[in-house]
Image (cartoon, rainbow, N blue to C red; front, side, top):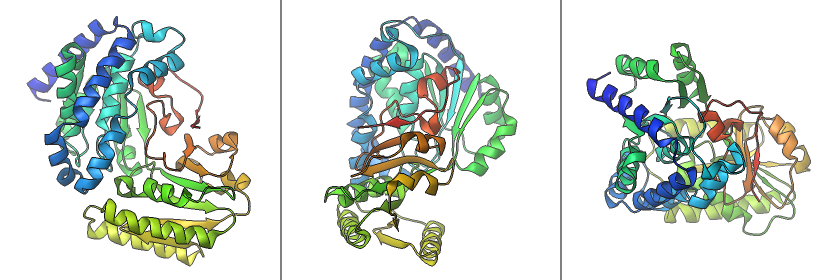
Amino acid sequence: MTADLAARIDAAVAAARRERRRPRREVAAALATAAAHWRTDPALAAALPAAAGLSAAMVAAVLPLVTEPLDADAMAALVEHELGTGAADGGAPDGPALVVQILASNVPALAVPAIALACLAGVATVVKSGRADPLSAPAFHRALAAVDPALAATVVPADWRGGDRAVEDAVLARADLVVASGHDATLAALAPRMRAPFVAHGTRTSVAAVGRDAPAEAAERLALDAALYDQRGCLSPREVWVEGDTDGFAARLAAALRALATDLPPGPAGLAERAAERIAADEAEWRGARVVAAGGRALVVHAIDSLATLASRLVPGAVECVGVAGARLDADALCRRGVARVCPLGRMQRPRLSWPRGQRPPLRTLLGIGSAPRLEVEA
């Protein structure tokens, strides 16, 4: 670890110790203001498409979605929900001195909620950017520093290259808690090197459920959920289970995906990525499922007699979110299957900051407080 990075970590830990006495409601207000500045940063909007491999239209569409959860009142409510009534008007509880957060590269701007949650929890944090987005973390840090320099001092944006074991091991040795996202194999290789508690968010996907009473626009909402972020994230639907007129829904979904291929064109896809998608589609069709694809986005469409049995069709621990239209699902059964979030179609890519990713409540996780598995149901 360089002397500069070590000094920044020392300063962040000291700053977080000072900031813990501040009311969380004040912290939430500063984060909300910084988010508004970050969202309208012209340099970020110009540079992010090339870095993240997304079209300019896609970046323009997703930047507001990233900051939408950073509403001051919603963040204060999150603190109260997880830490108790009155917690938003008090300081942060005792927790780890330093949390290291290692971000994935599949979607951009993961640094924004990571920084916000660490600030609300009152912990110093090192945020290691994914290789496809070295821009969002420093941009949000700059925005926060312009609004609240004392709070920004608790955050250390970092961007060491993957495989730099010397730097990585030195940073990990300082951590009291490590939270990492990425492919299962990457996390499995990282786990034995940990000296601190380790929270791993591995490979997961999402699905949709369309009931007989779904509105006509359900196909368009699902298409948007799939198109955003070019279907790269754990909240991106890959399969849809349909009651009733499966053929009619598939036709409407195909039309909606074609329209979005023009409005939100996909970014460039590599040969390996295209080959993997083609293999997945061929396997689904071989199993007798229908694949609807356009603009580089594809969904496997399954017929189902009753969505009451959906949970039994899901691979345990593989599904993060279920988007729903025209049906009421068994939340308890989905929770037992490992699902962390249920929401209306059209909102799959718009999670609240309270989203219990991997069924873990976000603030309590950063504070090292154990909790039973959680599923969040959004109306």
